[in-house]
Length: 295
Image (cartoon, rainbow, N blue to C red; front, side, top):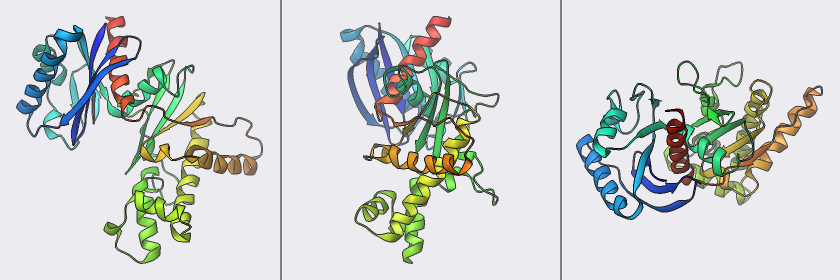
């Protein structure tokens, strides 16, 4: 079985052919079209290029937003307005003449890691995506826990302190950059996360303090999630998680919390994701396979 997997982002459409064992046979990407008609035309071209070679049997999609696959509609908002509040899955099935399944992008990344990545071998997993905000997903028994309002895994909304500041405002790469810029008295727009981490690596005290704060905030979230969801493993995604030692630094702060609490005996297992952007493609394929098995 060969599956067309597509990861739809604000700047690019990544696509691949994935087999039922999770091997990526071929992949590429194109700029995201500016209109729905252009989007559908691109998907038609992609299918046409792959079918003679692979015999595509279904298509899985990773989309931003509140994806309701059962209804076929994507709620919320994103950088791609034309995908929202429209019967997308039904239109894709007609366009491609294939079974189609679609899922939220963070959920797809979690499924990909649970299937063929850092979460393989575990049934329950919490997946945190750390970028300009903090997102994530909850995997229970190898399936996404969506929640009643499709907000399962939206860890970035968790309140972190008595000021009601949420995790996305305390532990994102954007916040690290902002704190570093503020400490130096420079304009926030002149600093990004990559620059802030580079300064920290070079020994800059202001940047190091901002990075340490990020680790601490993530550790608090992970500790609380361990004692509420009780997953077997935490997988950290996003480009920053690929930094050598990133997960270990977060665990250093988790260990401080455990020492202060004293009675808490469960030490979270925290590891970096393995597949980067490919996780979304793998998860889109896995979601289709799961849907077909339930049909």
